[in-house]
Length: 158
Image 1 (cartoon, rainbow, N blue to C red):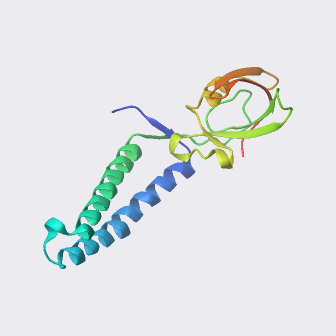
Image 2 (cartoon, helix red, strand yellow; image 1 turned 120 degrees about the vertical axis):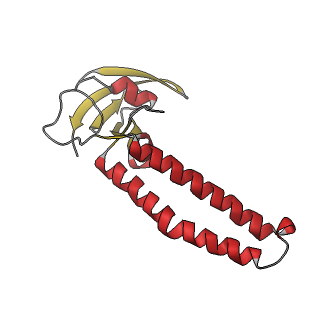
Image 3 (cartoon, rainbow, N blue to C red; image 1 turned 90 degrees about the vertical axis):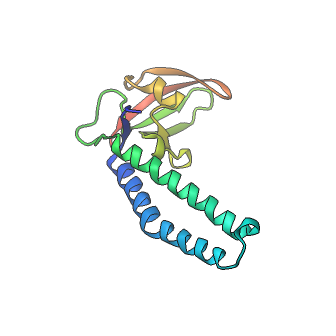
């Protein structure tokens, strides 16, 4: 896997913080839990021991995933003048043609996406349809609920 992983500076910092927490706090805590469970005797039938070992496996897997993503990170700082077209890191105000409601999305990296906060992955169907488009452009997007049509009202950097 040598593909770059686009993310904002904030997304990169969040992943670094999670990695630090996993390595310094969670990893040490799970080792203590394993030692405590092991002290209870026969580990072959010790549910606490097996549960702790499974949590340890999840922590180590997540650490490897984060180290890989951070090593392949392509940090894109979306500062500067507002762009004329939609690109990574911008905030887009859209008019939903079906409901006449405005929706606002910011295009971010996959690990930063949180639709409830208006943060969508640049790989999402809506974001892919928006990339390269400008204000007043109309965009049709196939989503799980069918086809949706949006008009781009505003492109800005927040």
